[in-house]
Image 1: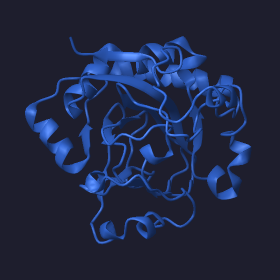
Image 2: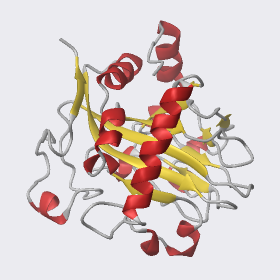
Image 3: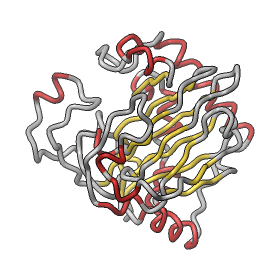
Image 4: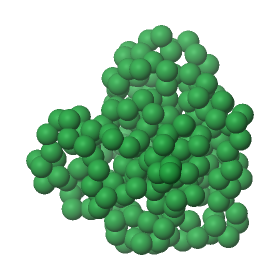
Length: 267
């Protein structure tokens, strides 16, 4: 993995809320990521989250099923995914880019846009999660080339600085987020096409979406969602199991190494 971060990279990320690295994976690493994700997708058989059907494909509705296949926490049932997404080098890279002193995994997810798949509405990530922190971030790794034809990501630069944790759903109305954050409705989106093996990292409050897949081939991506140290529970269940959510009260620290492994901590 190309994890080197220059001062200009951090400055761009802090200003715009996202940062693209086209040469993130070597060809050999790309094949390893593809194989690991492919094995997990086959083993899951549409089960979106271990132990519950809350994120299963069948529960997404017709529009959602044709937008993307979403499989979460693959690291929990595939050690190969764990070795990739829990890499200390990856954690260090994310901390250097964002200025964090340490980072834990919130969850991973494979996101596969099917052939002729619907566009993904503009949204933000962190408002869905079980903690709110303006420094949280995601990495999106292109397992296939992500183009304007097959559904690359689009970003609203600077939108992460709103400090607002409200959100909209991810449905057929692509601009619903602007009913919540109208001040960004006039900002021109920036496309982030990537070659296979490239990645883009974005802040959990950056508004982003993805275009439709206008091709007869799937567009595969593997992602990781990460939280700063000392994050606390906000009462949103998100990917927590019923038992995990029942065991937490608002304000409890999210520091369970079995649920949220530590990738990197400075010092």
